Length: 411
Image 1: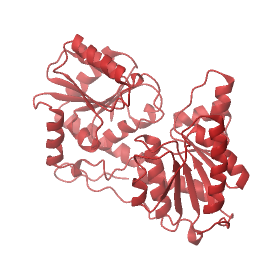
Image 2: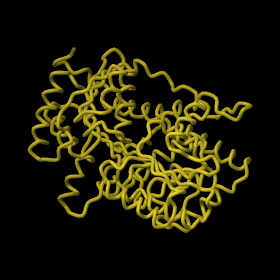
Image 3: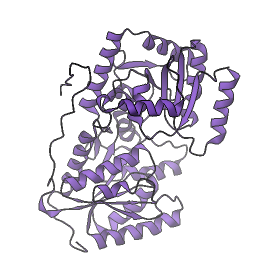
């Protein structure tokens, strides 16, 4: 795919994906996705994107979760949401959920069930066995374990007819730890909506609104770290790096909600004050317009101290033409081309991070443009929502081939 750039330096609209309408033919299979909750996150975003793709491909999309706030988005695409307590890890609730899902499968004529987390995967696994329909899981992370019991609990994600890994990093983990072979294991990178994350679509009014809301001065360069406020995301490492950088013309902007982690937020605020960085570090809270947020950034940082299973924000930032800096953990070697679309630094190393920030900020305009265009090309060739959805539909079609639609309860 070739990225086209107009004379103003902005991207032209991305090519549309291949039309997959009626991918499933006239049978209109019913696909049920099961996820703990529909709260902002990568798994949730992927679930909603797939519900839309299922509807567009001629199927019928059902989603079971514990509910809001993203459930209303499903209505836009004609998908159906059913509320069940599938976020619970209580063994009795998990078992009862299996019966509830089996009844739903029969009542709605569900042809395939796709689970996106461990507790609902157990319920889905038992329901699929009881009703005889195909079972799919997505490994959104390489789940840790320190005991045989926890490994067994995690193993339900590897028991499916098809197991989807969101990165090569996760794929290798699933293959090595759970022995899943290429006959069942599929690599499907997560994807971002490159129609939303497109520089040319961000208006000056949106930029002005966000600058005003965050009270950002015009005379500082912006180093942005998007991500929920949790220790392993490395906000503290970036704060230390800003202190070592020693440049008053640089401001770190930490974008993300604390999700109830008020003690950690207070710890960050106290460290900012202790280092005298009140004029150089801003904690914004949640942002509903990340495309505009990225456009305010001179560089976007992921300072995670634990492996990222994929790293969606870094792909979004590259799609917006922003240089990125990431720590050398997890899937970064798949999502970032070191020294072309960004820089890779050791984890938990404020000095190395400070040096990388300085290097990116010191790029001349032509170098910055080249990095930005390389990043946009990389994101659009490898990590789009359409690409992810098309590959997942292929997995569904593979399992449904020759089965025919379920008969009981067909509406």
